Image 1 (cartoon, helix red, strand yellow):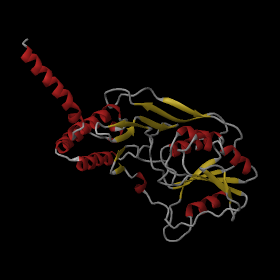
Image 2 (spheres, helix red, strand yellow; image 1 turned 180 degrees about the vertical axis):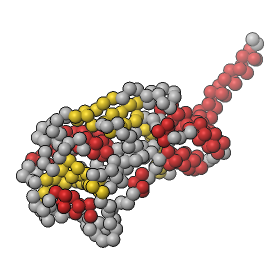
Image 3 (cartoon, rainbow, N blue to C red; image 1 turned 90 degrees about the vertical axis):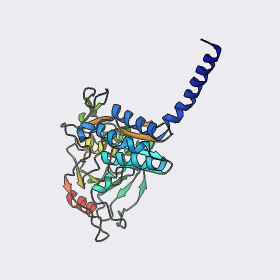
Length: 326
């Protein structure tokens, strides 16, 4: 090989190496990265009846012509069509995803909230007290399950506070989830015995139906447990780890739910980064109830259905729960 030929090949190699990152971060490269990673790891294609190859055929040519804004809109369209609240795209323009909470009515924005005899902040995420209209009934609002686990350990203190109550209302409305470690910690304080409460399996192969064997998850009592009647207040905004909490609590005979069907999010998402720096997440496992039912995209129906009313300021769900406990 001549010196001149060697230099030409060296320059071509360097040029190709410099070009590769630009190709990967191009609209085509970003789209292909997103499609390939989802193809390999997303858990609900077959369950949802999604033809992922057809998605590629339809959108790849559009991605090749898209600028940054159009590419973001294109990926958002694909994500929303999956109808999975655990699939999101995070870009400088904002966060996009499927608005699962819009499938049912939400609480009126001017809803008259709960009146307590003495409001207590047990932690930054647990708030409650005894009801003014029914002083023998306790009320706890769980804001989320996404804070540090120590915030949820305060449930022990809360249940000591309500030890003299005749029953307890736990308000989960608007709780979009967080960590199942936190939801399990709270639920264990209501357990009467160790029991199965959910099953899950991970996507683990190139085919859309490649999964690990089902893994069974139990819930067991912890510390001081509350075994008097409990009602959980639910709506469409209850999602993800909040639904894990409901699954666990519904395994106990003294717990029932009232309100609306939950959001239907069971995917336990993982996060990935695209070549242009955008972040996205998607479901990488499937979950079932203890009796082997899927609820992804469906939600968990309440024992007592009670829609919210936008006609007045009355909290119909809370009122119904008080009636049920009387």
